[in-house]
Image 1 (cartoon, rainbow, N blue to C red):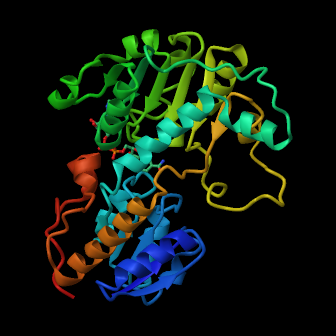
Image 2 (image 1 turned 90 degrees about the horizontal axis):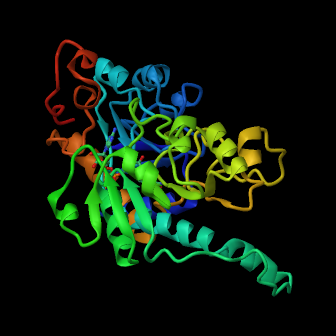
Length: 352
Ligand code: NAI
């Protein structure tokens, strides 16, 4: 099947081409992100392959449907950027890669945390400038500290294990506790109240939903331990960034390690080094010495890219052959039956 791959970067082009040796699809690599304005580029393709900062809203979906597209294949786990109700209305299944390497993301969260706690980026800058002073680089041991994991699914579980391995007391907040994680030495499920009150470190691994939008807002920060370190490799809008900036200014938050940012769309994944940054909130965030930002790269390991490419192409092949879509994201499952339309959940489409 011809697949229009939007927002193509060299790293995913290479991985998709490597995996496609086994699948034989026709891959059309496109640089623009998928939005209603670029949807027409999918003309002639049976499927679009979408990345995390595309805007797959109702208008974009109507336009790709008009262009002949019959499948949206997300090359990632998150689907908060897709209007699933509109896709269901148009009869376009949405498939994703639910798991590709929870280790990649959890390890990046911990890498950010360690780098921030020990002042590694500042130390590196200094040493390159032949400044070997240690002033201002005092960190703290993670061993013996209380570290919270909010959302202990695939990624959060790995993060909890790593933090327990450091000798942290690990508090886990999740609406569905897992007995295997609860049985780990030093790990305990609890409520948000205790997470905020007790934790020296809070790492976010819940998905972005209406319920978790701005989970960390001014009220949440006010309930936290003074000097808490916040790590976010989930989604940007889990944190109210303006409230985070105030909490950093007051010292309530001692450090923030962020791989995601709520207004990252149109900024992250792009080289803007010769431009004036127009986002004043991000610009302010980048001025703090105790903030470390990476541009949504937690997933970016060789293992994860190969898994993403393989599952994405397998998803398209299953659709093409009329096989069950095991990785379909159904509006009814996510949003409730009323939003999927009158036909209810669909069977896999016929072979085409
Ligand atoms: P998952 O679905 O395996 O786990 C999510 C966990 O959060 C589940 O245990 C669920 O019970 C819990 N949860 C959901 N809503 C909740 C709520 N309101 N309150 C308490 N707990 C709640 O997801 P996975 O694979 O661990 O991924 C987590 C998130 O990480 C993704 O949704 C995505 O946004 C983000 N992510 C970021 C990447 C990056 O490169 N920065 C890469 C991949 C995922």
